[in-house]
Image (cartoon, rainbow, N blue to C red; front, side, top):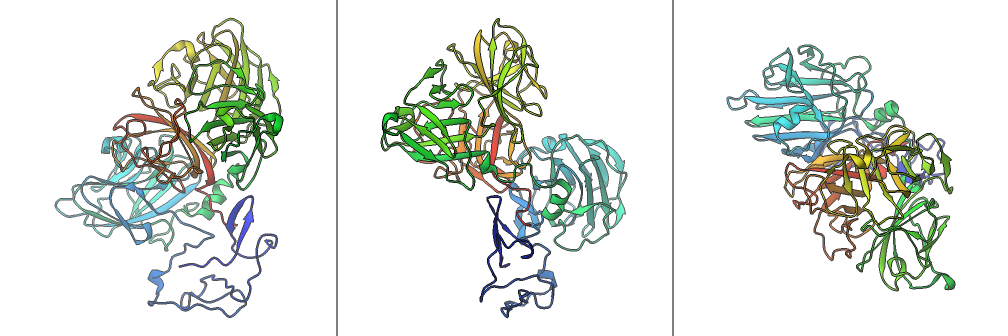
Length: 601
């Protein structure tokens, strides 16, 4: 057990520090009972290095086999018990698996060169004919079939054949009990080298598919017991030059800090209770309460305790101008709706969708650029845009004169992975583009439960570019609004997962702990747009969803359960809306805090 003797508030996040040097603004003095454990003396790990006299005694007889180089300022990767079919033990470094078991670690970094080792036992028994060790697509859950894992992968078979995406690449070394396998993965060059007891097995596997990867082991038949080392212990062999252990300190050095260190400065969920006060009497001021505050540019409000419509107000259309994500109602002016975007929240009047006395509400808030928009003229249509390029979010209003295939600028620095748009003066559905639909010829409707539909007149079968969004003749004449998002590493993730129909559902690695998740089944109709956040009760298990397409009150008890974890979310429900076997779900997640970066400095 490690005692963290100094913590500091830095950028809105609590962080452990390796020393007090340069951290006086954040760190309290050691104090009479303070201590600093550096673990420098392996014979006496409890030595106090603070300059005080508070050395701790060990209990139970610790020796070097109990000592790992894993401390609060430098954490190492472990296996993920939420994404493994085996029995995980020994601090996440041992996996005992039976027949037809997949074992995974959290997602590997997407840049840099990385090394890890594995030693297996029970591998050469007569029943253990099919074992596979390597990497696979991080988006594939452990419960998926072997063929799903194999589709995008690189690995060695027990017999020594090396494969990429299910096709053999070279013949390597057969593996027997106690052989130490070393894996060297180049995330930039997209290569994998495999070594057996220090000698390279076969040829380097090259030309890997450019997707996020995770460590993968498969026991297709027979028992298998695996011990893993991601750098917590000394490696059995000497890694090749430039390859680093999988620790947060090394990942930070390779990838740098996330672009957004404090997600609460860009997005927040705020809960409030209405007071029924009209604007003329001061209204209801709602203030953000998380680590940082900001003036929101898009506010999405939903009543929790009663059946109320969802309401959207944004800085481009202006205060009091309301749209409803759950229906096709045209934009309307609501004098007692949201009337002010404040410096750290907003003010609402007495309209029931915003502020009924004693009713409870949730408000999801995004920061754009705190302007009323800039006119961009690079497409067929001018657009008025407020964009937060760092956070991958923009609001754009464009005007269609004659319905046709036309483009407008979205204001972001890269192509959006999610676009939610509609004509605001006509009673039409919301159109949703998501990068993981079957193609850009498909779309979803935010306001209903339909599966994805093939209809070229919506996005003109054209995916957004780094500057432009293309709309087809399905957008009616008049003003339209588009909310665009793209993934930002460590802050937001737009992706998809395959359901398995089990309460032990897929694990979705995001690279952060989520604050907000919205998801939709694209293969089946009659499925809602379920929304979860980290502020409403029950988010682990997070069954209190508020579907974007329904006016229903928040459920009285969890019924669609997911877990938010330090690196993503785990589906804990077999309902059609979030986890039908072999059906695809698209999602957007936004971070509470970066998960694949250490909070240490």
